[in-house]
Length: 83
Image 1 (cartoon, rainbow, N blue to C red):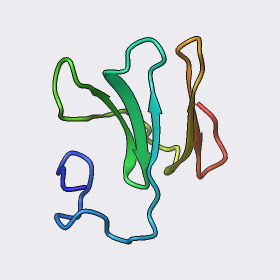
Image 2: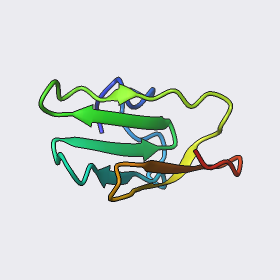
Image 3: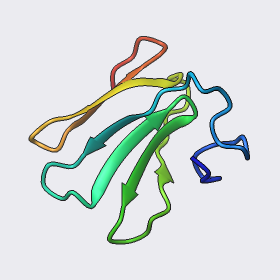
């Protein structure tokens, strides 16, 4: 909650009603993806514990994520797009 890479608010969640979705890579559990209303992130714990923000400009906030067994990450956005 207190990672400056994830939350622009220094106190963590700006609103306690914010959601967090989490999906692990089925092949490598050291890699996981998560979304907040702030954006979409990837973390590879073998490399670093600092998450990387993925580019999602013009798509709105991520509202749902799902990882397939074939390593495809599907993300639903508030604008109605699926990427």
